[in-house]
Length: 244
Length: 296
Image (cartoon, rainbow over all chains, first blue to last red; front, side, top):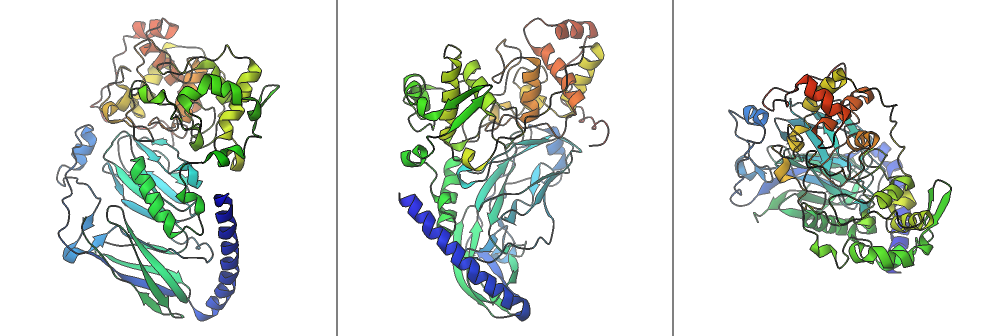
C-alpha cells in the first residue's frame, strides 16, 4: 500500500517538476546556460592501494612489466586531488542531456579505462577492448531498478559493445576472467562530470537555478552541497572527503 | 559484493528517492508479488495460470525456492557452493538457461524446459513427472515473482542453423575457436575446469561458482544435445560468469566449437573418434591468442 502511495507522490512530483522544467528550459535558451565547477580533495593520508597480482594471465603481466598495476579505488594526485569522483545534480528535473561526447569504456592492459564512467539515463556508451587477451564484460546492476545485467565476451579484436542503462544506479562492472578488473558505471539523471587527475570538474549545460550537487566516490561515499547558478554564470562547489 | 551494491543503491537511492522509489526497495513484499497472480504462460498449446500453481509450488518447490521465490527456502542453507548452487532468486528475473540473448528474459518454453530437465550437479531434480499443465502453471508462477515480465518481453530466441556433418576439419577449426576466444581461461585446455581463472569465479550474488567440467561425465546444466551446447555459449548463462559469445563466434564456427567440446566429454561420440585419429594436442595457453578469422 505504502509503495503505491509513494509512487503516486513521486509520479505527481515528477510531472509537476517536469512542467516547471519545460518552462525553465524555454527561458534558458534565451538566457544561456551556466555551469558548476570546483575541485574535489582528500583531507588526510591517501589510503594504500595494494598492488595487483596478474600472474593468472601472462599477457597482463607483460603489459605491466614497467608500470606495476595497483588498485584504483581511491586515486589521489598531488595536493590531495581526488580523481574519478562523479558529480551530478541529484535534484535534477530538467530534460535528458543532448549526447555530446562519445562515451568509451576501454579494457586496456587488463584494467578499465576509465575506472569510473558516468552517464545519463539512456545515454549510449561503448565498451571496447585494446587487449590481446579475452575479457568478459559483466555489469552487475540490481534488476529491481530496471537495469538488467548482461555478460558478453570480448576476445582480441572484438567489435565494440554498445549499450545504455534505463535507470539511475551505481553499477559495478567486472571481468570474471581477470577478477581484479573492477570498475563502475555511474548512471545519473541530468548533467554530470567526473574529476580529472587534478581533482577538477566542470558540469556544463546547467540552466540558471538552485541545485543540489552530489559528489560520489566509490569508497568514501557521497556528499552534497547547495549551489546557485546565475544565467550564463558559473556556480562553484568544492568537496573535501576524509579517508575512511 | 551484493551487499555493497545494495548499500550503494540505498545511499544513492535516498538522494533521488522522490524520482525513483523502486531503487530503495530491493526485496519485494508479498503484496507486490500477489498483484501479479494473474500471470500466464504459453507453452505449445497449453496455457499455464499462476493462480493454479499455488498448491503445487507449496508442495514441490517452496522448500528450496522459498515462499517469496527468492531462493531462501529452508533447505537452501544446506546447498554448498561452488559445487551445489543456491536456488535462483526469481524476483530478479535473471535466468541461466535461455534461448534468448544475454540481458533478456527467457521464453516460457525455456522455463518449462528447465523445470522438465532439472539441473545436473544441483539439487534441482527433473520434474517431468508433473503433467504438462502443472509445469506450465509453475512457469507462470515463477514469472509472477518478478516485475520484469510486466515491463519487458522475452528476447527473440537466437537462430541455430541446421547442424552440419561432423568432419575432422571442423573439429580442428573448433579447436582454433576454442583458442581464439580463450574458453580455456576458465574451462582449462582439456575442459577439466582448471583454467587459470577457474578458482576465483563468483556468480552475480558474489557466491563461488565452478566452471563446467567437460570430462567428468555429467551433463551441462542447460541440456546436453548439440543444440543445447550451441545455445549455452551463444546466449551466455546470465547470473554466472559465463558470457555470451554471440558477437564473436559466427554461426558456422559455433558448430565447429560444439564438435570440439564433444571431444572433451567422457561419453563416446563420433567427435571423440575423429579427434583420436587427428592426434589433436590441447591448445597452448602460452601462445598468443590467434587473430579473429575474417572481419569482426
